[in-house]
Image (tube, rainbow, N blue to C red):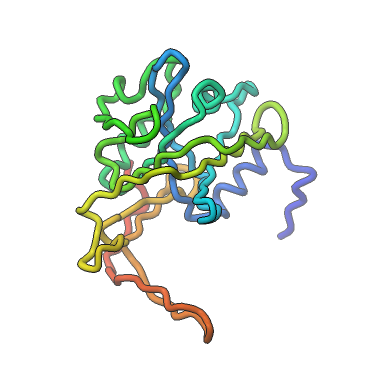
Length: 221
């Protein structure tokens, strides 16, 4: 089977992409408006970029009507944001914040999600998130126009909050304790509770993981 993406509608292309590019980590992004109203929204096109300078990115796809999402509008006014990581324990509140609320209405308040102040930027973080990256906007790259087009947001990490509960005895992040989830397409999610080790070829460093053979749930609905 061969798909000619030049002939696919944006909706069909998006459908194939989100079901094939898996698992996708989730950036639960908090921002503030010029008026100081908080916003919290999940994005599953999310990845690290580099460490010099420490940079990450997430992609906010436009609404079906072609409008930019509140997160992007807020960044134009206050160019700072927090990327909160999402463990299995926070899957349901994260999912709730994907609902479309009126512009200016806070997901923190509407869904009773506890916030904590950031150290170096104005947007708050999710208090219960095991890891939260405080970021200053580096740039937004626009890809395409209208519905389905994207705003690729690059942020420079200026601070991080890491819960002691997700650290191992060596003081490093323990992936089993972190228990993050990822998008698989549609309403399916993956859980990082089944891990395995593969050693890199000669000249590379070994990947260190813990093994837990509990089967992940298909989704959390």
